[in-house]
Length: 139
Image (tube, rainbow, N blue to C red; front, side, top):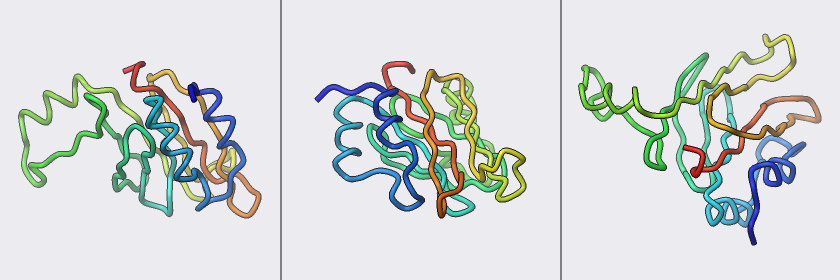
């Protein structure tokens, strides 16, 4: 079944924390080259669908997407010229975790130049995360 970012975001909109996406929806997203990104706890950016990964982030962090995957700095504690060069060419997603301090009520929000659709994740019926859905075709 073909599905686009807007339709997937519509399916996910209004889900409760911990129930953001089903295994069937993950598979549907993967088959359609869609990536669903949302926050968990106070320190994780989760990717489901065409990318199945998570990165640690707290406060404001950037994820770099290149060749259909999340780039990771394998060099860890020292500068890696290859990583630095590759991330400059990659698409960026900035995650902002502000907990209850955000004036619009969302603990998690994302900013990116990648064309995307948004959906709301709720916690006990209140806004928690403004998740995004994008297509690998738009990278």
